[in-house]
Length: 445
Image (cartoon, rainbow, N blue to C red; front, side, top):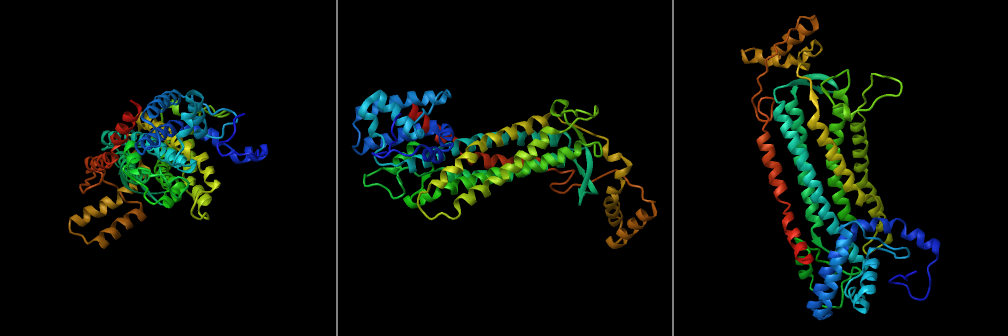
């Protein structure tokens, strides 16, 4: 069994090792490609300051590219007895290249290694989330435009209130995602700062060129203060988790609406049969299980920022092992939210709407405000008009007019979907993913 990078003469108790390592080796598989990229940037910088020979750098970079390819194929393995991804990469280099492999750790600590791994991983996965959100946004806008003239009841206090439309309903969630994307972009900006070179949190006596590694890894800037770079562990994850939770909150609300609107008592829309399940005892049932699970998964994601807060909120500056536990729910959260987004996108693209629901007599009172406003337009004071219509309703004499004429911005007749799309696309363009893709391509080729 290989020894730990930090191990001297005293062997760690097996139970202590099992307890402290926990699921870290499993979680580190998420970080493997990014650990390799971080090492490539670091050793390129080491050569520039004279800590590696040019030939040594060339050999190390070529072997790191080979290891990266293994990770990209999903074949990277952290062997039994190897503590983490950093140790595994260094072990693979040393096995292949001998003592040259032992030189890559100069000027850094596992603390700033995992920091840069997490930043690179998070930045990449935010891109995946943003792209998925854009697909769903486009579907929502498309469905909003397609069904813009289909009127449905709007509710306040779960009471029938005023006319709404499927155009408004789909479009509302599209605009909600536009706001969520703004928050995600802010989180991306936090993740897009380079902590490499902070070492164990207090820098290094080597003349490290942190501007160089920032450029090589495609970061927008560095986390300048080395103590703050370490304090960013947990903080970055919390901020990003809050952005994910915002998207989850939007989709949880949408899922609740979809479950309710799909029920027989509402009947506003019908989910495709393949997205429903049956009952073991009731042959007529078609349950909206997919949206119900979507709601629950979203609500779990909304708990993640608080979990991270509770792990970090009583820690002083510096590194502590507590931070290791954040990875266990944070790293998989990206797969979860992307799976949710993709499933919601697929379901909404195939949903069938009830084009006749607004003419159902049970909803005729939602046109009362339309009648009040019509009479006001004819010169009757609002309070008098309101009272007239109210008395007609109480006497059971109210008969609605079904013509609706809403023209102001954002209303049934003027959805402003072009403006909402412009807002979303403007925010999406701010991410500038190409910068880090170009940096990675230079490292790998």
